[in-house]
Image 1 (cartoon, one colour):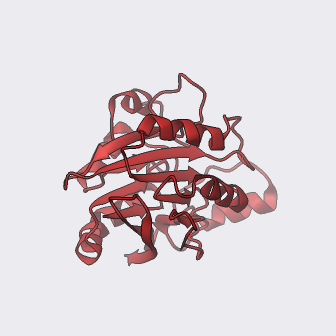
Image 2: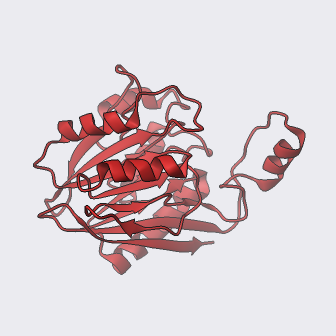
Length: 261
């Protein structure tokens, strides 16, 4: 089974790149399912129900999120209604939506998906992602063999540590949030695929997708600034995960980068 995972999609430029490049990636890789991180699709921060549905219409199967999922209040009820979008599971009980799900692909295969948020260098005070990962795996159940984890976190050490914690119990753990694709994809000893960060689908002439002039001024002045999504050529970062459906082990994990004008 082949699953394509697209990194953080930034604003309209990122959404346009996904819409344009997804058919080409399908023809090239033959993926069976495609997942993307969508917490930044609405002007670079947040997601609305309309944008989520537009994303699903392009052929995306599932959407993960992160710490910006709550930026658009319209999404709260949608999180409760949709069975194709997850928010980080380690928010306190009672938060809208779900942190994990199972999904039957068009080919009839079932995949599990878990979304978690890191705690190191992050502003939120959250439940332990290690313990919550264990509980979410119990919810998904042992009969689901293909399980992916999107760990939306800042610290590379925390991402790698959680990958080792889950090694042999999930098919792959992919990191998101930093918007910079890392060159450390590997399969751990227990058969779990791992990459510290998938990257982003956003403007390349930018600072993690945002207009560089604004970010530079913020760093130099230390004053608050309203971030704006950059323009120009877009890069789309993703990973292709190939898995054994019988065992759930990752057979191969490959980085992908494509450009879109």
